[in-house]
Image 1 (cartoon, rainbow, N blue to C red):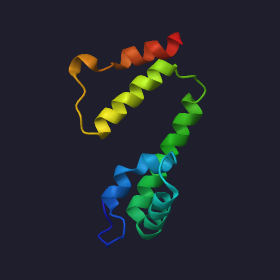
Image 2: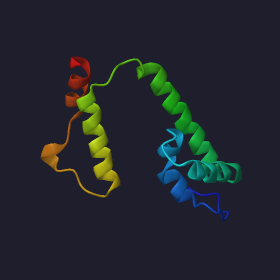
Image 3: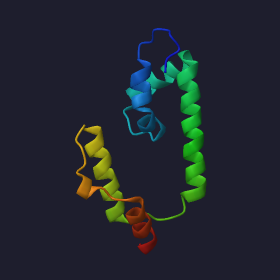
Image 4: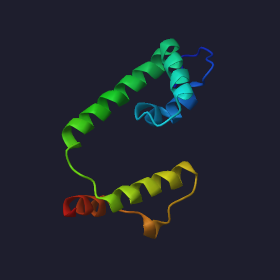
Length: 106
């Protein structure tokens, strides 16, 4: 996605790190770069608005359940593996049923 205009921060970088921006998990300087980009790029701003709305909806609908610590650690571990480009071995992949069961057990 791109509006076709040149930007100091490339659209692909913004979209690759959109959830980090939404969750405020990036340095303030990077947040500022993204905010400037959104002011200049309406397609990225639209994508940001959509993802922000989804995040709010999920929080409203599902934000009241406590997540077991071990489940959170597993999920975060998988995310880090994926971000680093490593593949998760098939035998090590947690299924949706495993996650659902763990969430209701805690």
